[in-house]
Amino acid sequence: MGNNHYENRANDSEKRKHARILNSSKYLSAFVDEKEAFYVGLLYEDYINSPYLDKYGLPKDFVENASFTPKAKKAASKNNVNGKFVRKQPEEKVTNTKHIEYTTKDGTHVSYNRDFHIYAKALLHKYNIQFTFKTNIHGIKIVVSSIPLVYINDIENNMKNTHVINLFCEIFNDFEVFTSKLEPAIHFNKRFDMELLPKGTLNEAENFEEVVRISSHYVKDNKEQKAFQKRLHLLKDYEPDIRGKGPNNFFGYIVFGFSNLDIILLETMYSNNATYVFKLSDYETNIIRDKQSVLREKLMIERFYHDANWEKRIRRFLNNRIKSCEGNIPHE
Image (cartoon, rainbow, N blue to C red):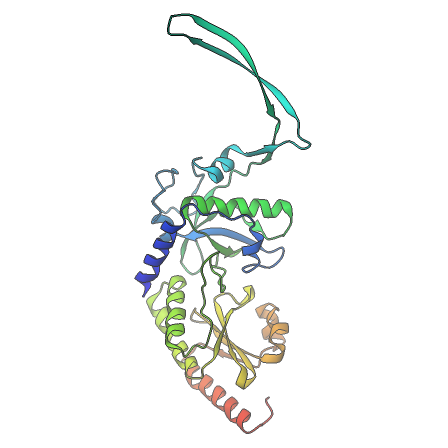
């Protein structure tokens, strides 16, 4: 399944050579909140598979914290190094005098000055963005912009964010959004033209396999992958619908809805964490709080730590929830 995933992505890249976007805000709003810091980048395994590394003078050996600037080759990379110039406003023309000198076929030497009347240019931006090798807390090697960006939907920030995204698009035909902690900002729209999480219920075979495949892209440890798959197998027995990613304060969590049980359940791809259960009616209000506040103020209904009793405890909870709903017993 994983090999097909990478083959499909390779085919997509071939179909859209040097893709570019016009407005970064359209894509970033799906990943980050207003005024939130983030990085643009790629997984190192995607970076190293690019056929353009030599062309742009990019290193192939991963060296932690090493930074480097892509060579100026096409529009985005040229603007990055040399700056982007636009017509000065209000428009005005300036005279550019060039000395022309040449020898004709009959040996006559010609030399004169010629005036060219051209529009005056003004520097729009010159960011000189570098790429940096990093390893995040989950041991995933990534390549990101050397400086954090900020999502603010104004002209200045949108222009800078768009430029950095297009720099990655020019060289790699792709980009990903990472949080300020260098964690992938998982969302339904992981990339600007690809759907990440499937829509529907987890018990549907295709949806289950897709969630497993996606998780393997972020969770590299085989033991951790198998543990997550085991938790998914239990949850799918209860046929939850897939709602999307957890908010940024619940990184790595996937949101499952149990409308018939009046609950929302957050399950993480990473082990040694916990499963959180919220009441459906006030989930959106409580989930925006940081995890410490959720725990301190007990904003969740239940919290099941990933220990040896996790399966037993969560099955008992869900089964009791079903019984209370069928018997119209008030929820706790």
